[in-house]
Image (cartoon, rainbow, N blue to C red; front, top):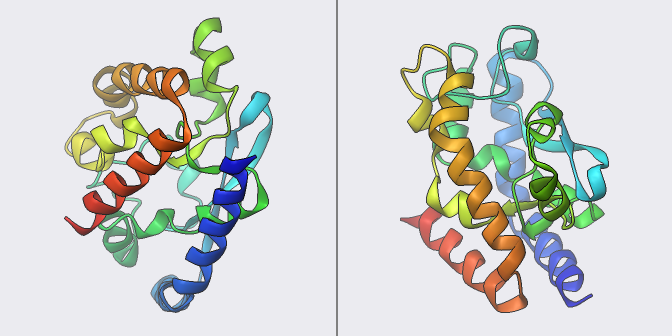
Length: 197
């Protein structure tokens, strides 16, 4: 209950304070190629329920038909403004809407596409899907710029599964075991520090 109150207050305040940034990014995306401002990615949420996760669109229209869900920093599908948004994690800001609506939390395991959830063990699914997915967690702090690790990979999907996914799952399991109000506060502050660093 306390976690949900913090999510509502935090996301609501964030949306108000960051509204000028939202407006600026929306204008830049529209001027870049005239396409939609938001990308709505199908993700698996708490209890295995599917939801649409909002992001600022960083790729060309129809990018999902040109490649997989993993994005390298040098992905040719990225637009001009998309490269900038990815570099500074600004594409993630619309997830505050998901948090406000109750589909996500400020802190929790990052939501995955169905393909990767299907690869989880029963133990991993039971644990990770027992909580709301979040905007940040231990895995996000460990691998703040995932796209940089995938940069230059011949196949970003294979690279993701080998270089990132095993550690990411282990850290998500750790979060579920340790999750508390104080752990969430610590992760939020560490995330803010990472952003400004």
